[in-house]
Amino acid sequence: MADKLTSSFMRSLCMGQIEQDVLFPFPTLPADQQALLHEIAAALEDLLGPRAEDFRQWDVDGDLPADFLQELKDFGLFGLIIPEEHGGMGLGNMAYSRTLQEVGRYDASVAVTIGAHSSIGMRGLLLFGSDEQKSRYMPQLASGEMIAAFCLTEPGAGSDAAAIKTTAVREGDQWVLNGNKLWITNGGFADFFTVFARTGAEGEHGKMTAFIVTRDMEGVSTGPHEDKMGLRASSTTSVLFDDVRVPADNVLGEVGLGFKVAMQILNSGRTGLGGGSVGAMKRLIKESTQQANERKTFGQPISSYGLIKEKVGQMIVDCYTSEAVVTMVGGLVDGGYREYAVEAAISKVYATECLTRTADEALQIAGGNGFMREYPYERIVRDCRINRIFEGTNEILRLFIALTAMNDVASQLTELSSSMKGVFSEPIKGFGVLSDYARKHAKLRTGRGDSGKLQNLDESIQPQADAFELETRYLARAADRILRKHGKNIIGKQFATKRLADIMIDLFVMACTMSRVQASIDANGVQKASQEIEILRVFTREARVRIKRNFRRIDNNEDELLKALAIDAFEVERYRWDTI
Ligand SMILES: Cc1cc2nc3c(=O)[nH]c(=O)nc-3n(C[C@H](O)[C@H](O)[C@H](O)COP(=O)(O)OP(=O)(O)OC[C@H]3O[C@@H](n4cnc5c(N)ncnc54)[C@H](O)[C@@H]3O)c2cc1C
Image (cartoon, rainbow, N blue to C red; front, side, top):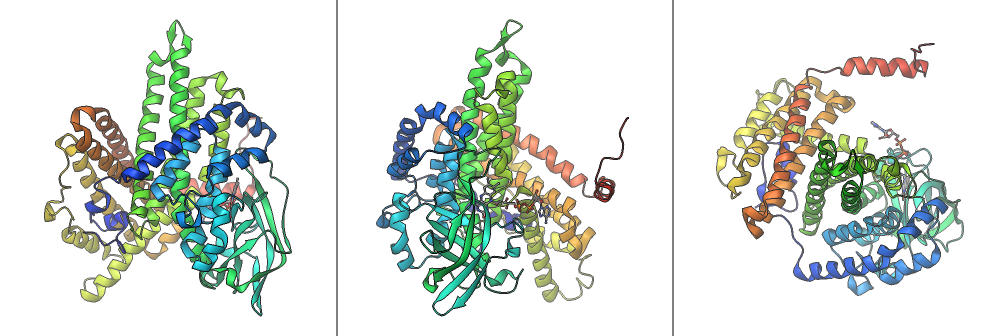
């Protein structure tokens, strides 16, 4: 059995090891939580279903009215992940993500307001708070009396969070905070802020500390509501700290470990954004299929045309596979796995990019109507654009996904090199030996040893299982080849790193989808699961084409030419070739 403290499916996969028992069987919610979710979904339909026109108007106004916010509080939407003993619903990660999915069907501004509170705003309290801190704040956070916000970003520090300049200086039993935070979701009405400040020299990860700051502390203020492209009804403001005196017992976690606190909050909250993305995709599929059936051109409904079917078919594959990945990551968190950061990052990147594609194609299916504000498509396109930027940009997350894997391969090399003296006299050349070693010694958790077969899968999806195993070899070879080519300079080789990340993303999505389809076959039989089997087939074929292409392009690419063009453009800061 995989060790829940140390196992990461993807990190093991990069070492040639398929830890099947981590992903199989596909996670399901206990019956009581399923029943609760059905109730929540029905109640949300009553609450949000009739508000379509309001959501459209609030997007135009750029505001979520206070009485509607009160309705969300009364519903309990701010207490989703707060334990029942503190007045919340005590939902696990899967159920929470699923609830955001339901909200995401109706309106992204509402989903992000609730999500910023639970996914990031108060999650630090849940993960790192002392019992005393929890008793002090959780009841008010559960009722919505206090809404939470997460304050990390600053004008000079977004992706590079360690560059924050907000400082906290210890004075007696208080810390004095000074600094400006930028683009803080819920900033306009939050009362509870998880704030990150420097308690050591600039740029040192270890010298950041997390604090609980409340609006009633003197010196806390917020800037005006930002005028945004999307999520317009959600509140985004700056949050300013001017000599704010924070009691020492408001430190969240340990002094100096704030960077770790921030990263763990973001890792653990990622299924919220994934869930919201899946909800929006489901809604778009509903709208697009209705629109395509109704709209006639050349005497036929446009749903009869191949080019429209291609778009809707792809939307379904994207939505089903995204839901498989997001649910799986929620299941890993609820199942007590501790090493899920790479998998959570993959779920965020994949689900947000599938939603981008789905929203764009849904607008295309709607034609000119899609461009009109009267219809929901253009708003969803605008709303979902931020998903690839906040909670870790998809670029930074891709680097994280691949570099974590490479780091593992490199540390295995170090371990091996000490136990196999001489083999690694030239470390970088030794990677080939390493991947051979990893392959030969891969103890496939399937029990069939070196045959490398996933076990107990229905024969209808055996070809996809075979493909997965085969493509896993490409992953090991890709990591090996990239490391041999670039060695320790890999950190600066982002074209190569992205290719490895993309291979990893495709493989994880394939594995999660296989697990989901197998669960459906187990529950309903092959006949009833036939469409889901087809979805797995389509995804696997598409993924294999991408994986092979990414692998081929490790050595055969235009990277240097593209880089040269970009470097020249950065120098002249313009496009050189005009026709007039
Ligand atoms: C609507 C909205 C809500 C937000 N809510 C919150 C919130 O509640 N709390 C909070 O703390 N923050 C919040 N943010 C901030 C958000 O998290 C940041 O915008 C995000 O982290 C990116 O930082 P940045 O904007 O400074 O971009 P930058 O870090 O400047 O990045 C610019 C571009 O460069 C790329 N890039 C950067 N570094 C690298 C690299 N090393 N290699 C390759 N590419 C790189 C990025 O991927 C991006 O494409 C919000 C932002 C918005 C717009």
